[in-house]
Length: 256
Length: 361
View (cartoon, each protein chain N blue to C red):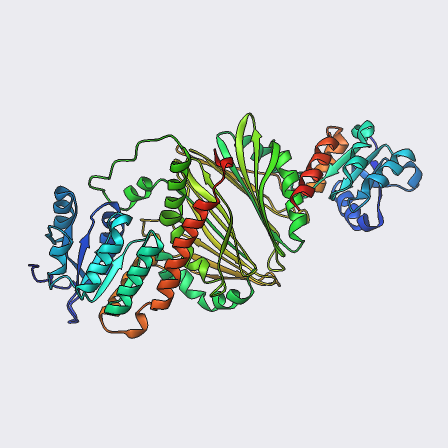
């Protein structure tokens, strides 16, 4: 059994760090000496690329950016040389159900991502854009957008596995209930659906695929997005696409 | 003329069942209305059936214990036909509804869409006002007990909602038609044609008037009166569907519909405000699977669930017809509301066609 990796969280991530380490006690431990920490947990608020660059320059082996928000694309691209040391952990794109959803999307050409929660609609739309990339949608271009204070509706064109897809993003701000993030995909003879919870809960998501022959349901592990990320970091099998992140920021800026 | 209605299955004496005359005996009549009326047999009997296909008319009339009518005029002069149910292709609705109202029937029921153009909508509204004959449109969700149970919440959200979402995802009709009944002679499916601009426009118009229409009167309840709805974008989806973004009085309106060859259905309407969400999940068309389930959620996370109730909106709309004919003035849909619904639907269809772009190629 190898020694746990040590973590150094940003101040606003202390509670999250404690929660994650308590559920992965053999994999992670608190860094006693900040200078020798193995993994920095970086808050994804504005200017996070600069913070990451500074940490890596100070000798941190790996930086995990928790919930990275849109940042200057060039500052993101400037981190490309250190891409192997940087991990993005995102509320939707890193959810454990994403791989099952992506596997189920064959035969679909219309995607609808619909969210409602307390965060501003723009924040929700950015997470949806990132989820699109995680689901393998590329060449995304805006077709139209409706911004209405607490609500945003977006239509995008894109491609997935050489199939043209139409994407609909819908985000609404509300204090009512818990966060809801619906993923729906449609094709001539298939419907895929999944409801993703927010990153604060390990509530499971079931990916349902309906076709003329019946229904297939796959339940994702009961695990939060950030815990999934830390386990992958421990295994060394996480790769970040910073160029993709920069591209998504540019798309988001074009839309809003 | 029509034979006397069959004796009521109920032992208790009550008013004689109301005679219904159907013009149009296709899958909607066969799968929806006849089974619904059979559930309400103490209140209704099918007096006459007319269809452009005489064999279909004969078959449907036989199963309903009704006579075969030659055409609409035959129904209109039959005193045994107290209520005319118009279930013909949409292009025929306006003229047939007006004729039925001018014939002085006790009520007229018309399947959606009631009108396909602003001109038709105005003619119908004028005739309704002139004749005073009650007119009820088959937008069954408006009569769904799940929706009816949350009308006070709807009234509150009408003033506070900032987002309204309608999502209708269904298999093609034949799947649920066959689950509801044994259909006699389904109309042939249209042959695939090239999706040029004209076809896209036709598909978008049909998508709004035949699919989105089910929930547009409900959507309109959350929008401010007297404020025009602006269609920001409209897209035709394959194999059949639509994605429409619209804005009205500070509300964002998200309309989505998709029909395909798989088996699942997901029919949802949602209104969202800063502090409350109302979510309705409806049962599919044709089958009698009970009412919608309405969930109201507040900022404390507490969700109140209404339904499912035993009967659905199809039965709900016929119960309203029963109440109208029996003389309950409260049951009669307000003409102003009917006009507003009509205008909203027709304008949305027209504006959505206008919003189509080359991107849909």
